[in-house]
Image (cartoon, one colour):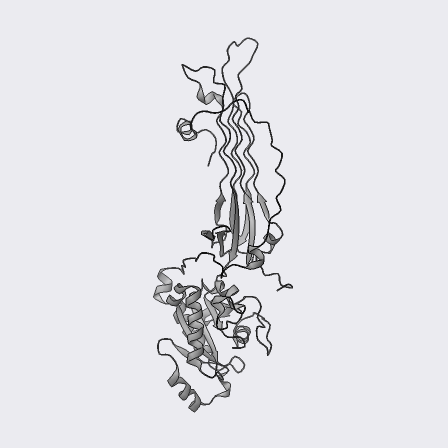
Length: 395
C-alpha cells in the first residue's frame, strides 16, 4: 500500500470563516449636523463546500492538505459600506465520497454526482451595522452586532466506489483473472494470496454496445468483519453495487460452505448487503467434465443463480454476462437507485493510522480588524435578524 496512490480514507480538519463585525460609524460632514448612524454590515464568513468530481478516483490530494480553512468576513465601514464576504473553500472529492464526524462517527453527508455541491460547514453571518438599530427613541445607537463565530470540525472522508457489479471471494478465487479477461482492466495476477491490494474497476462490454462497471476488491477471509485480513478495509466499496458476484473455485473442498462464509461476513459488515441481487460463479471450471459439474450442482444453494466459468478458456463467460445483466436491469434496481444506510464508524470500521492522526494546532490567523471590546451587543441575534431588510447575501 505504501507504493499505491489509491487513498480511500482520510481525516482532515475543516473550519469555516467567521462573520465580520458590523460598524458603529456615524456620518460626519461639515454642513450636515447630526448625520446619524451609517455603519455598514459585516461580510459573511466563507463556507467549506464539498464538490463531486468524476475525474478524481482517489482522496490522495487531501492526504497532504489536512487543514481546510475558509476566509473570514471583513467588517463593515461608514457610509453603510458592507464588508467583503470571506472566501469559500471548495474541496474536490471523487463521486461516491461519504463524510463522517471524526469524534462521534456519525454519518454527515455524501457526494455521488459530478458537480454536486454540499455545504459541509456554514460560514458565520456578518454582524449588522448600527444604522439597523436607529429608531425614534434611539437616534444614536452606539453598538453593532459582532459577526457569528467560525465552525470547526474534524471529519473523515471515506470513498466508496460506484459500480454495478461487485466481486466477492476468498483470495486466489480468480477474481482478478476474470476482471482482466472481460474488461480492459489490468489488475495484478499471481499465484499467491492477496495479490489485489486495492480495489479495481473495469468496464465490461455487453451486447448492442451496452456495458456495465465491475469492481474487484481484495480477497475476504473468515473473520474479515472483525478486522482480519484486508477485506474489511475494502468491503465499503461493494456497498454501492447493485449486484454481488460471489466467486468460489471449483477445487474448493465445500463450495456451499465457502459461499455461506462469504455471505456471513457481508451480513456482519452491513446487513443491508443481503438485499442485493446475488450471482454465484464457480471459477476454474475448465478442469471439470460434465459429470463432475452435475455432482457439484446438486450441492449448490438453490436461492442464488449459479454458473460454471473459466476465465482462461472463456467457458461460461457469456452466460455469466447474461446473468449479471439480467440482475442489473432487474425491476428493483431500475425503479430505485442503489441506496444504502451508512453505518456509524466504530472501532471495526476505522483505519487506525488515520484515526490516531493528531493535528498540529495551526497558529490562529491575525484578525482583519480590531473588535470593539467596549461595545457589547445586548440584543438577541435572532430577534435582530427578523427586522433585517434583506440587503446583502447572508446564506
